[in-house]
Length: 158
Image: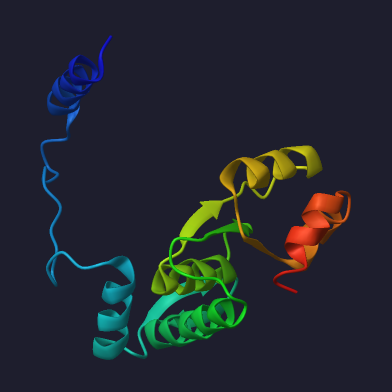
């Protein structure tokens, strides 16, 4: 099946099964901006409004914007530039979003890595994606230590 036929088939299925109560087009309250531009606007309009509540810890829109700026600076200081790939080897947590938005601000390509991956899976994804660096939590470090290639890659960010 060629791509156009496939996409037409998917479009028809989506149209038939789309919930009637939901709009079919996305609404952009600030226009079509990038995600990090939306975060900055929200941080200016609602600096103290909770953005993330994680196990009782609250991160405001301003906090997320400020911390992601710091992470963007960290990447730039390490020589990471627009178009480079960085891997985020983290579970669902505030740090993931801080790094995600910081990476967007630099213009890098984000490679999300499943936090359940073990050494061989992790090594394959990093090699396949061409990631320039990897960012992780301390709980993931044991999987990084098992591979020479991963240690070399990880040393760029530590």
